[in-house]
Length: 503
Image (tube, rainbow, N blue to C red; front, top):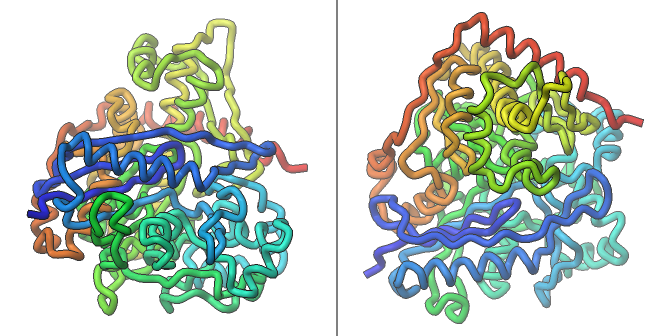
C-alpha cells in the first residue's frame, strides 16, 4: 500500500522533510539547520552540497521516525526557497559556486543599470516582476560574469542553472532530470508568465545562454523517479512549487480573493487572482500560483514580499543575544503594554514590496533610557505585522482597480504563526480576521498535495479543500483611530530607513 506522501521543504535556514497521510496530517518531521554564509555586507550564500546533504538526511530520518519504508510512499513533493541560484556541472553534478541566496543584494547596481537602460516596463510586462536583485536573473548573470570559465562552460552546454527545486530533482534523479516547475520559473525574472516560456529578449540582455535553463513543467506532474539507492525505492517525484505558492496551495486558497501570509524567514502575502494576471500599480508582483495540468489553465496571484520577518527574531537570538529562543518573544512582548514609542524596521537586506529599496537598512527609532529588551522584542514582532500592513494596503489598491478580490480574512502559516501575540497584533493592525490552520506546515502540505494529486493519491481539489481546518481565529480588537496612529508612526520610521546605504 502506498499510504503516505513525503514532502521535502528546503528553506532558507533549514531543510525539512515531512511525511503526510491521506488526511493531510503530519506523521513525522525531521529538520536540520545549515550555515548562512556572508562573504560581504549584503551578500548571502549557501553551500549547495550542505543543502543536499541536509535535505537527503532529513528525508531518511523522517521515514525512520515514521516507522515506514520508502515502498509505502506514493510520491515525493518538493517545495523550496525561491529565487536562490545554483549552477552545476552537467557531467559531474558538482556545484560550480556557492548558491546565491534570494536575500543577496550583490546585483543592486546591475539592476540600477537595467532601470537606466529602460527595462523596467518590459520586465514587468513579461515577467510580472520588478527589476530587483531579489530575483534569479541578475544573480545568474553575475555568476557568468565573475566565476572564471563559467561563461565558456555554459556556452558549451556543460554548465546548468536551476533554482533549488531543479537542483534537488537533478540530484534525486541521479542527473536524469533537468526541470523546474512553473512557479519557480516565474520567479527568475527570465520567464514570460503569459507566453509560459523563457524570454529570449531578457536572456539576450543579461547574456544568459538558453541551454543552461531547465525544462519548465506544471507544479503537479510526474517529473520522473528518485534513484532507488537514495531512499530505498524508486519513488515518483510528482510535485514541486516555490515555497510561497506551495503555502497558498496548502492553505487551499483555490478561489479568487482568498489570501495567505507566511511568516517564515521572510514574510509573503499572496492573493489568488484566478486566471487573471493582475498587473500591479502598487509595487506588488504578478506571479504564477500553480498549474495542475500541462495543457490546463494557469492560476495567478498577486504577491507582496517582505525580506525579513522571522529572521528578525533569529537576529535577536543570535545577533544580540537578548533571547534564548523564538518562543521567548511572546511572553516578553506581553510584559509591556506597548513599545514605548519604539519602531523597529528590519531592513537588514533592503526593503521589498511595495518599496523595493535595496539601499534601505535596519533601523530602530524612538529609543529612550527607559527602553529595555522587552520593548525591543515587542517592536520587532510589531514590525513584522506593520510590513504585512504595507503589503495589504498595496494589494487592496490593486484589487480595487479590478472591482473585485476584496480580502475577507487572512490565513496565516509559517513558524512565527504559532505566536499568539503576533497573530493578534496582525489582526489588530490589519483590521481583518487572521485564521491559523490546524496544520501550520502548509508549505510542505502544499507540496504534498501537488504530488498526491499528480499520482491520484487524492481525487481532486474538493477532497483537498475539505481537509482544511481552523485552529484559531484572531479578530481585530483595536480601534481604527489607534490602528491608524500606530501605522502612521511606522510609516515615519520606514522613511528614515530608506536609502541609507546609497553611496
